[in-house]
View 1 (tube, rainbow, N blue to C red):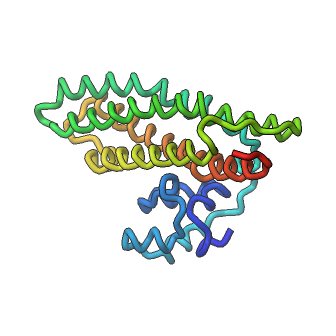
View 2 (cartoon, rainbow, N blue to C red):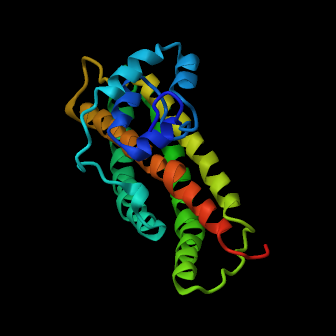
Length: 241
């Protein structure tokens, strides 16, 4: 990869270790991965040379990172469902219970907790609907494309016209979620609990940070790998839509 001209999302897709560098500098590699480092730095008034140096200092990747780009699309869709969708489903109710408790116990001294709780509940509601659309509409079509390619059969026209339509919707919803968690990170001073925080407070903030990190990986796999490959695969079929 050429770190000066390649898009950030492509770099992370090639080597996920680069994600830690971008995150450290506050550069969005998932929702806004279609930018060069220089473009991202201009928006945040950062020195791109410093990031180039950190990327070039990464040791040779000896296969420790998973090469998701080499996976078949149906396998990648399965992985996203079983790893990231399941993570959201398992952690959401736990976080909701913690945040509700924090509002009741600490809300008088930390009113910002109510805003955090509201934003997270909005995210939880929308993410649940978002994942269902992927599981019931987009991912089945991706699997159908793989089956058709293997069998040589024609690809039936989907009810949504072309795969780009649900992809565009999913990308928009990813951007909304990215913005929500940037707001939570801002309100919490990057998930730093206050001096009077109890253990539940500290655990809740740590879980919120983990939730955001998992969401970044989730969105990265879709925006930077699965979606563009699905669009390209659909173009290989000679189907009149």
